[in-house]
Length: 471
Image 1 (cartoon, helix red, strand yellow):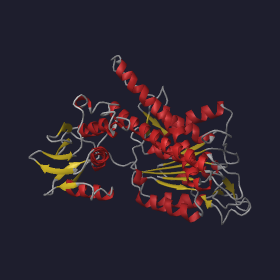
Image 2 (cartoon, one colour):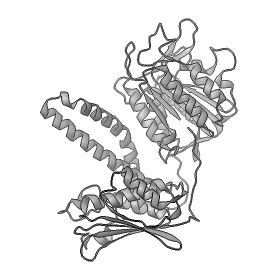
Image 3 (cartoon, helix red, strand yellow):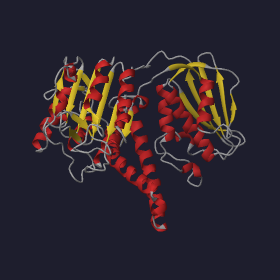
Image 4 (cartoon, one colour):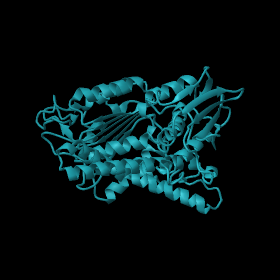
């Protein structure tokens, strides 16, 4: 997947909403609730300085994708005065000289034609984007290639819309809203055609530019993303706890978009903080820190909501756990801060991403709240392996110990262990359960806390190895 956003221009009007478009789409399409695309398969190109940066990203994605290849562009669309062809504007693009300052749509079409991807999707949020549908071109257009779906924000001779003061452009704002909220009357999954029809209806009712689409070989009728509005009919009345968890999940999702915008604004101010008055500089630093803290809290709540909804999945592979732990400590620059006791290789099937997340919580807690020495020890047993993280601090208050993995439970308020949201250990335990194991907490004789993670060497149930949706 390639997401391209052009928001700043020398000769054209700036489009600040484009940066929000890109950030939110990246977050949604790589989330477990929507598309589950690994972040490594998502290339984001923000404000490219030249056409080659876009071309190279598209060609690489087209070579690597085997399932789904998706390209999205948000910015200005331009027409070559001489040929009538569609160009995607970049920083220095000029209306009268588009041929060497903007990206020809042809440069997107060609690598899509030759890609091995079974499904190809192009989404253009720009003026005149309907021209890619083939009405203004000759020969074999991308719309005539099997397994291709084209979605344009406007007709071939129409302008797209970026409403002043809104977070998103009109087209992408509607697209994002559908991905978040879904369609109540639709099934468990939404097709591209269902997304298009709902967007066209909503935008038309709002008197905004109507999107256009072109479908080849019925790709638009196949499931594309889960439908968040679809509720399974179980006949079971929801408990107050279930209602509260759904509320937390919904609120967390709603907070993501404004938080993304605020984060970008505070980070931009932080970059310019050396030019500010010292009093304002302190306020900017505080706002930036608190915004990041709030973002971490929302991310934690969203992660818990995935476990509550039963949509969290595993992507396991056979690895040497000892090497994984060594690499993890090295990447975090924690090698010199802990004592590692791992005498032998341990081969196991694990989800390395979730294992690393658990280690980050357990070892990070020990480094923040415990005293040295801090020890990480590994051991292998007939059917499982064990990782113990021990510190030499004051330990966990006995009154708190039975509830240490509960949500929003913190340690002794008199100690730094009480800092944070109280969700990290809850998420770590959920991850351990998903992997077929468990985490236990105890206080060590002589002082300090010990967290013991047990995970199976092999997985035989609940294991999901989902293929990537592509690049």
